Amino acid sequence: MTAPQSSAPNKDKLTVFYDGSCPLCAREVAFYQKLRGADGVEWQDVSGCEAEEVQPGLSKTEALARFHARTADGSLLSGAKAFLAVWRVLPAFRPLARLGQIPPLPWLLEWGYRGFLRFRPVLQRMVARR
Image 1: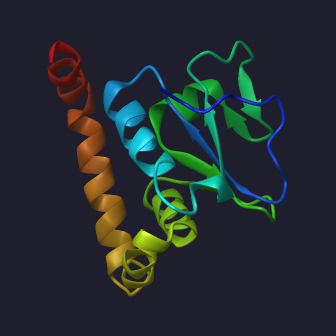
Image 2: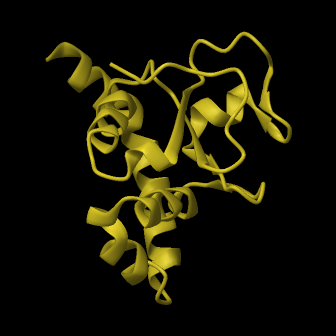
């Protein structure tokens, strides 16, 4: 179950754009949403978005292909940088976020995320069957 989607993101919060039709993504976001601090994030499932552009500078296709977040200052992050931004908001994950900023970990996290994306379709089918 995902949080209700609003039409405009809250400018004071981190906004996460995720593919709610992906069983892996939906489970991960549901996990994050249960954690303390999750109310500091605006969660937007873009799978049902009818517009081609989810936000200025972010197409629906891009948002469905990779994990994205927009910071309160308007910066658009994707991949490992977006995960680190989410982790900074969630107290349970803050130590990982701090650790993940130490070079070369940001590069390694992004490399790992890109590897995951290659296997995501197979993993989605496996999770959907369960």
